[in-house]
Image (cartoon, rainbow, N blue to C red; front, side, top):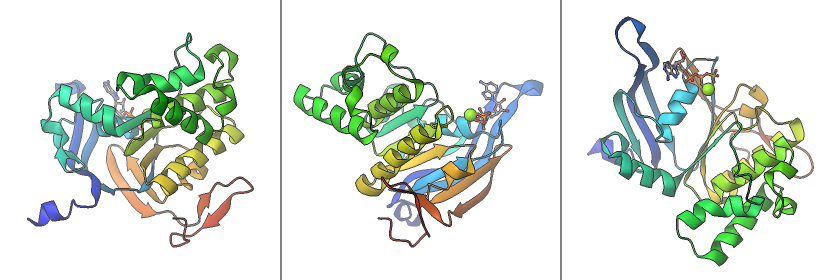
Length: 256
Ligand SMILES: Nc1ncnc2c1ncn2[C@@H]1O[C@H](COP(=O)(O)OP(=O)(O)OP(=O)(O)O)[C@@H](O)[C@H]1O
Ligand SMILES: [Mg+2]
């Protein structure tokens, strides 16, 4: 069947997706007939004015919320037909969700915070410590491994929280304004970590941002307005963060 074949490289396939909050006169259509396919290994920025439906779409993609119409397939599996329990399992294994102001547990060190989800997933102690240290290093906060959240700056805590999200090795990383509250240097380190995950490990990344400069770090830019996708295009002059200075590469610039 042609439809199934076209999904081979697709990680996310959204068709005619809608999300309506409330009923009757008070109903709000946060998403209307959204069609979107995202291939494995793409890095996508999602932009749009406040209230355009960005977080609503991310929550549906991350399986925290359900669409009220249309379809959503992730890795070829129809997500809207799954039970809440099966969705939670899918989410736990494959999806990392990063948002602004995510909290660390105050009584645990950075390392223990990052290890915790993997402990729940019953990963053996030595492999989860290795994965936790790698993730902290990727975010440039390995020196904070033994510190408690109260001993970190906001930007450092945010990076540790991102390390926690990515340490288990998800296929899909969803980030809702991950750099919104960070200074430029911390924001750069976060973007660099996302690009490393994407360019080196092939993780699919979707980042919501209000900042065109942040969007410029992705390969593709999708714009929402009033719940509709109004633009979907390749990012020209993509910015690649490296240890020295940022370089600009075109879409065929050989970043992979
Ligand atoms: N729980 C809810 N109940 C009713 N309406 C909601 C709810 N959550 C969101 N909305 C509405 O849905 C629309 C989309 O909201 P959403 O949070 O997705 O916007 P956004 O693009 O993420 O905006 P921002 O940039 O401000 O974060 C808005 O009109 C919002 O008021
Ligand atoms: Mg939002």
